[in-house]
Length: 407
View 1 (cartoon, rainbow, N blue to C red):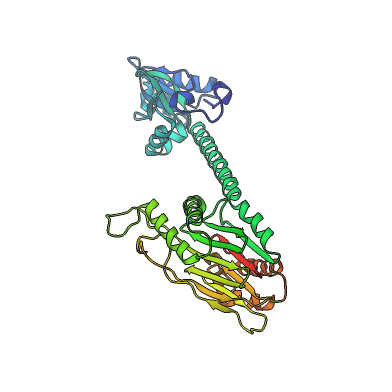
View 2: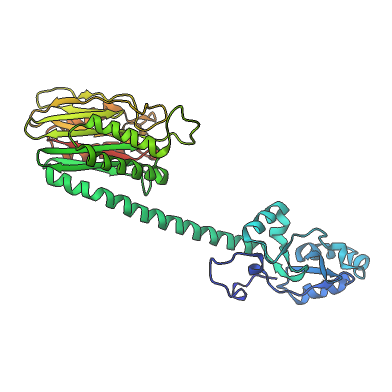
């Protein structure tokens, strides 16, 4: 029997049990002759499968295609016409209770092999025939249910993206207020990402941070919420003027929240972040830098090469990072016109080019040198253009965040 969606009378995407797929159908008794079955199939061209009943219970299923194929063979009319229809019956069809969930039904159908999808299955209620269901019908329903689940997941992720971007908005406003020549690029690999940044203006200077949390997508985004809120609390308690102390405080906070304390039993997670924290003092024009695996790059007007201010090789919050680890500040005097650059590894590690290798720090430095006289926004755009050209057809590996500025 052909599946007619109009017979179900149910809201789309709300099918949940086998009964929702059940279509009423005629059946035959086990002593029905093959001639009688042939007559039914001839008269009812929409009849694809025919349940066989004995003592009120279904015992088999006759497939139209198999039956008609067999009865068309030479002498089969004469040999089998008057015999019981069980001769061409599938004696082990898929039989499911009307209350079986669609998920369980799908697993049973797959286990039964192709015949359940091709010939259909029998649906019973209290052991008696309720109707039949069909493989195409089941596949359509499963596809619709999966599409709805995906739609709901994407809706939730889109909403999470709105939340994540709204948390970053105050930093964008503060940055545009504090620095005339600066650009901060933030591109999550997916809808949401594992990179975040923080910028705040104060009477005597400004504070900035960029961080690359473990993972990307939804897991990475959860880590940014933990890390960002921990940084906000640290700034409220300690102030912005000691980046090294702030990183140490964030390290303790993240380890505490995630229970990632070495020597205190097994932990299921080992998450954290690479980060760079900056404090710029307006009066002295000194930049205080503390880095956890993220270096700072500096190009002064009189220099012929980009200088690297190395970060410490200890990440923030990980199991093997000591709870009491102390980062150190590096104090940098910045001449007027100096170009500064911070980036997460999403830029440097991107695979591309003719040899499918990482973008690398050397290529990044070349762009900075070539664009050294341009404003930070133009430098950033040139970096993005070169990055995207390098990436080519390669998939994006990671979230991308970088901060280009002239204090």
